Length: 140
Image 1 (cartoon, rainbow, N blue to C red):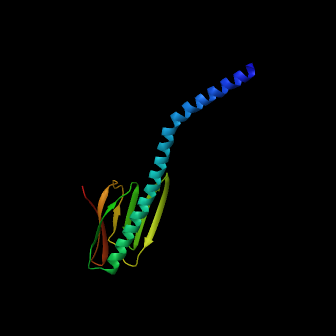
Image 2: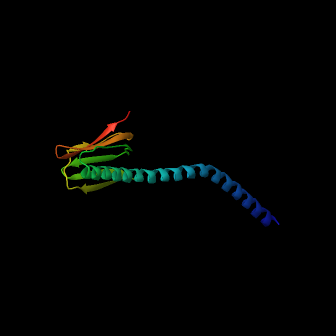
Image 3: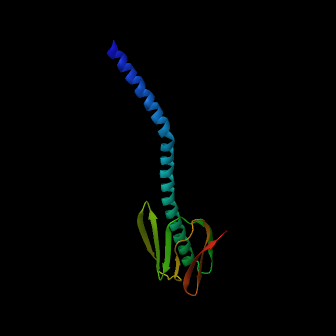
């Protein structure tokens, strides 16, 4: 009888500890899943910006007398270099450095966008003096 009583006390105490432990951990688990969701959103923000700049450049190549303007969200830890016929994207994602290089059949006015604060900018792409000019205009 004592053995059954001890087992029931141990089982009750372990359920009590498990309840306390899980009530402490559950809010942190929500924080971890929110953090992971934000990380995936940040990778998406890089690809959205790359696609937006690419479509703007292609639009200007096809329509050289027009100007392309659009509000874009510039992500953090992104460096963009426009040099000759190349666009070089360098960014840090989960402590790893990545780079992406795009080549076009027309040259750019050489410009560098390094260490820009992440916020919303006006993407301005135009064609002048046989070069494509890309600029990020601060809206604030």
